[in-house]
Image (cartoon, rainbow, N blue to C red; front, top):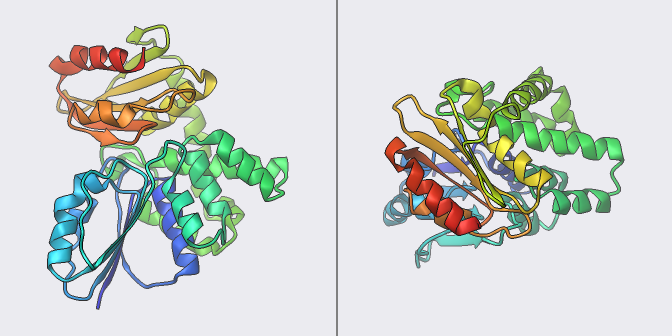
Length: 318
């Protein structure tokens, strides 16, 4: 029997995986990738009796491959917070899915393991921009202000590292981040001491964010803003973090960051406003993408469709 652990390469996917395995240890083949690698399950070749655990990966985008695994006799367990699409009714299928706007996969796992090692799940909440929830959880754990600041930084910079067209755009591969988390055991604060990962990500996160906030918007509405950014490694890295930053400083604002791909299409990151956190995933689904209520994206929008996207974006959020 072979075990497979499949997870998104962002804070939510990696830390949800680590928290789960702290409570339920299991040797497994790890399958992960950049945040927008939405077809991770296609890389799993499991058979009769093999166990596949999937975390923070869209079920809607991977349903055919999940069905393939079940048809082969594999046992599948699914933890996620994205729009799921049609569920599969199968005796070997177990779902832990919650699509409420202020839920991360890490928080779903945290509930599943009874809150053990919950600081990892708090970091996922920071990474997914559930700031108020994360702060309240951190305070309930009696953390100092300094500890909360570090926990927030860890969540933000690991999430920042997950964005890129390919792993080559990242400072560290998701596998490297996962191994660094694993080396920490239950103590998340050891992550700041794992080689040079944390200081490198923190320094470059700050530099890329400083560049992003100097850009001029493509479109501004009453409660909306769209940015278009050039095809550079830093723009692909910062797009998600920049989106989260914009909606955090104005809770009535919805935003979209469109970054030019090398083939002339746009990769887009969308955030609903924090005061009305609905609609991002459904909007992106209309343009071949997906997501959840609070955040969504699409990977290859034709440049000729950008104005149509803007119209739908404004219609959704204004």
